[in-house]
Length: 466
Image (cartoon, helix red, strand yellow):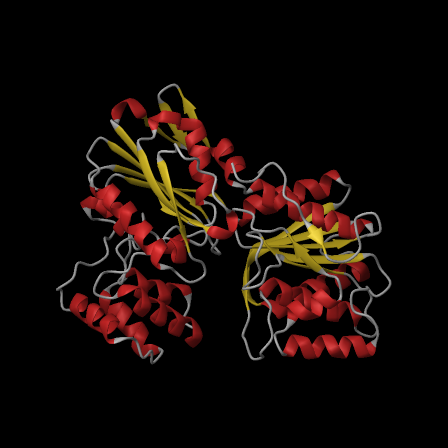
């Protein structure tokens, strides 16, 4: 095992624990508890068990005496840890497997593991990841009626577990996805396109495994936990069509590579098979279980807050929209708690999860959690703020340990993070330039965890003392 999953190390660039105040220490403790609750071994030990010959996953049971072969496939940031946890439970019952893992998180597999680990790329798919995914597809194609396929799909699988159809290739897939993201297409629209350019997404992995029994094991990194969105739903039916995918390209005026357009046009003419829908027999023996999500992390964080004498409130696990606006909103909630005791009286911890986004207009470096924290810090420092002389802390971090393209998980700010008027003005300039990383590094506010080996998106912690 490459790392110790029992404890996540969380560090702040600024004051050490001895000199930080209670709000900062509680915020860090809540983050640590939230991440530890969604680490693969913790989740699998809670939700997966072997009782004699019966494998229990979530609320379902699978009698292993009815199968002559068990294989494990999949990809994502938590997939390496999930694969190892499954090996700990099933031992030599696992016959083979291929999973595509994130290089930053390391690998837990050992030399004699029946599950091959292939290091892929994130956020951009790599040739190695594509080749590994192709091997996983070939493995499930060999499955028979008495094969049990455990398909592990976790956050990051959209890039790590990628297998574009041969006619399109990796370069064209990257170019098209980047163009859709830049044009502001939403996740369902992007998925409609990439599901129809893939050999695994949109239920195609499960269809390739028919007539085997396929059990999807998912860790959700999407708001709402829709299994068809997690990793673009390799084990889940898809109702979108080639025609829908072409409509998305037209709607956003995407100048897609010729290979992409031709593939989609062939499909719209009926020359390519559609993604499988719920009524297709190839998916008759498929279940998908979402074992961990943002709510899992928030529940653990709330428990720690209560244990430390704070009244916890889970605001939402579905916060989305502009990151800086989320930061301003959380600062406003702190002001309301101080001013009126609403929506909860101090000492209080307000928690939220979800996935915010950044509209990039500047040339700086940052991520949604860094931008959210910087915006909150600016609000705390504004003239006349009711929290200016109070013990308040706001932490925003990505549970995978990397916010955007940075090496920081996020940041922790207090009313003291940003100082006088000139300092606040400098911070606003940095925010306008989307340069939250530099601004928060200079102020000793960065949170670092390293790659955690899991991912259920953002976790925000607002702490207000009495």
